[in-house]
Length: 360
Ligand code: 9Z3
Image (cartoon, rainbow, N blue to C red; front, side):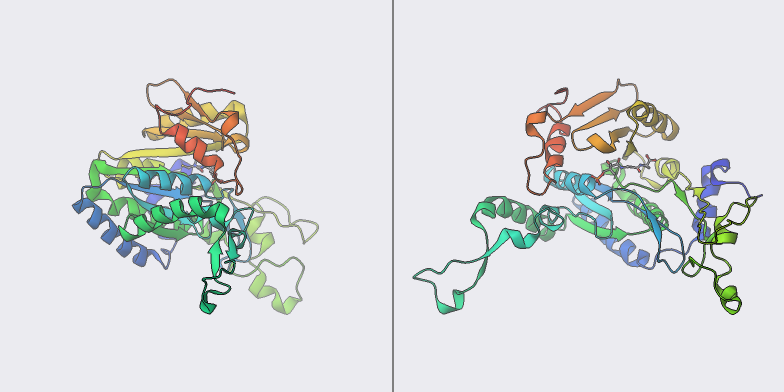
């Protein structure tokens, strides 16, 4: 039996994995955009951060109808990107397509849709006929929206933000590898901030069905096209065919861990790598974050629990005691959209000024 990725040296796992998949179609275009972006900011000696954000998918079929997803709205990544921009960084935002984006996040996936922020201008004596029915931002949102709009415009006009989308875990891996290599000239001014929720399990291409997996038996003359479906491909090798043919048994392999390769090979010498660790069981979080730090020898693991991720995170860094950062209860969610929750945490994470040891 072929060795699993876990049994291979990181460099071997890299070559096997990247040879198995064709690179994403958008990769050459993304690489060209990233090269131009990096060149510009290297010239200006600006710090550049690659923020990854959103969940990766694992397709069940090559012509994908169904896929497995990882939880992430993109709030952490999009909010953090705004803070990096404010701190003078240029940001490459590698994100799951249609997940939250810096700045537009305030109005895109909110509980209130963006139309709720708008109104028709009230008629005034002075208003000309052409002004009649003009759409304006409602008065109570003017200040907040002006602030967001100015920051958004600034980032755009000064070329500080590059948005690059991915969908599948394979696309994410290709993009991450290419971008890290393209960032080489940035050297110690480069930061990797890996907030994307990356799938731990996937179906290798060699075992993936081409077409939509059928939920019922097909007449014999159709069977050829669909014979690579559920039973043969998704049932474990020694398992019997499910008695009920509607049952789909999915057999997933572990995704190779490329953080090693990022730290040891792809990322520029002297750059900083920050990864996130997501758990749901509180008793595991610190242990898992510490294990990740030891395994990959990078600079910081930020641990968070699914249920409390908007209020608290734990920093695990080499030779330091674990450090919890918490948003006090009084500053938790009063927002319309819910996304401002994260702002409290981002403020706290900025350091000295933040309520970093508060535990209420
Ligand atoms: C996180 O833990 C992020 O903080 C969240 C953010 C996904 C919880 P939202 O987007 O949620 O604000 O809704 N990311 C998980 C990072 C991850 O999957 N890490 C992998 C690992 O620990 C690889 S670096 O194995």
